[in-house]
Length: 147
Image (cartoon, rainbow, N blue to C red; front, side, top):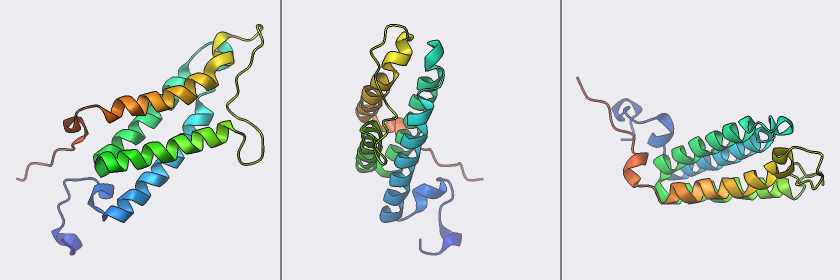
């Protein structure tokens, strides 16, 4: 399998790499999806429209699905750890002290504006925890039929 011409091409590119490369891909995927989804989660919150949260959860869920498909439970654990750490570091004001995920307590703001950050923080963990207990067959990419 070291010869690229002999490799089975029925699996995606990232699934055919060695274990360390797959882990590195999972880490970058987790960090990228968590960063983009954290900023996307606020879209529409000022108008009580959860479109940003839907996009954020979909992005994080797809990235987590790929991580579990690519690396099994271990790859999924790496994804969950990296994405959760980045989301919570951003919530704490990293890197420059300005918190992006905030919770307000002003009654003049819409409900979603008040609690969007809290829903995102806890929902990102809940989504991945639920995905952890889904059947393994849901994360298998079937091979192509040879002709």
